[in-house]
Image (cartoon, rainbow, N blue to C red; front, side):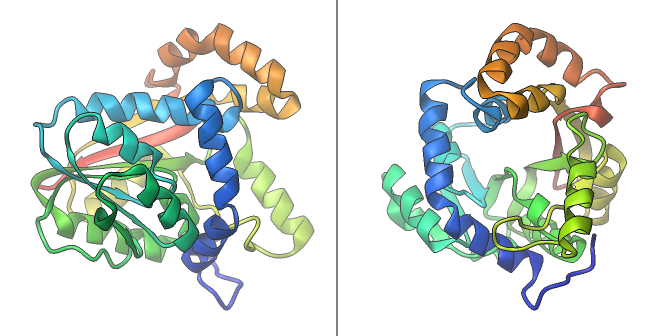
Length: 268
C-alpha cells in the first residue's frame, strides 16, 4: 500500500479530505464535548486525550507546544487550560479557520504541512501529532518526523498516534479488501492509511534520532466493532468496559492489538 496510485500524493489527498470533511469533524467534536461515549470517534479521542494530559503534566508552565495537524483546534483547547504557549499547524484551509475561532491568539494557527514546518530550529518543547501520520506514505512520514526533530528543543518530546496494523477491530483487513474491490488505494473521501506495529514505530523514531522511546497501547480495540454494529450498543459496552479497557490496553502482551499506538520520543 506504499505505492501512490494518484497524481496527488497521499498527504495532499489527506489535506483535501480534511477540507471536505471539516463539518464532519466539527460535529464530532461537538458530540465529544457533551458525551465522550457518543460514538467510536469521541470515545477513541477521549482515550488519546487522557494519555496526552498525562504527558503534559510533566511539562513546566509556558512550555512551547505545537499541535501538528491541529484540525479543528480541540486539542489546542485542552493545552490552553494548562497555560502553555500553544501553536497549531494544518494544511486544510477550512479547518484552520475553525481552529482560529477556538483560540485567543489567532496568529498562532498557521496553514502549512508537517513536511515543511514554518518555525525555526529548536523552538518547541513538545510536538503532538494526533491521527496525522496515518495519512502519509513512509517518505512523508519520515519527512514529518525529521522536521519535528528539527523544531524541537534538545530534551523536547514528540507525541504521535499511529494506526495499529494488528488492532482487533480488523481495520487493516477492511482497508485491503476495500482497496481490492475499488481497484485503487485512496481518494478524497477514503484517504490513504499507513499501518504500524510497535517495532515499526520504534524504528522510524530511531531513524530520525529520537531516544527514550516509549510505545503505549491505547483503547480497547474490539469496542470499535460494537460501535459499527450499533452506536447505542457501542456506547453501552464502552461505558461498561471502560476501566477494563484501560487496564488491558497497555499490558505488554496486548499493546500490538490495541486500538491506537502512541509513540513518545525525546530529542537528545
